[in-house]
Image: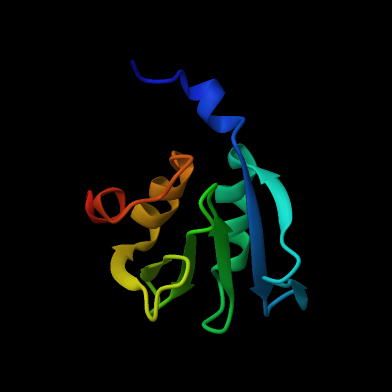
Length: 115
């Protein structure tokens, strides 16, 4: 049975980012805890500059990192613990924001590849 949206929005993730426009950053070595309901707004604020990014860490320490690739495209990169490299998928800007609005507690490649 699917969880109600308000329960999903109460999930807590570890987040790190670099916001070039506002000169703010949270290091990946010391991420901050954040409710899922606040992550899309933060991502929208951060994903305004080519050198900005946001990383979200799930309960298995898998990282989902988002960064701009052009004006209308966001790259979603999934990096698994102990992996040599991650998997990158391009998304339209609004689709990327929508994708992170309902993050599962544990990221998977199958989830990333779902349109």
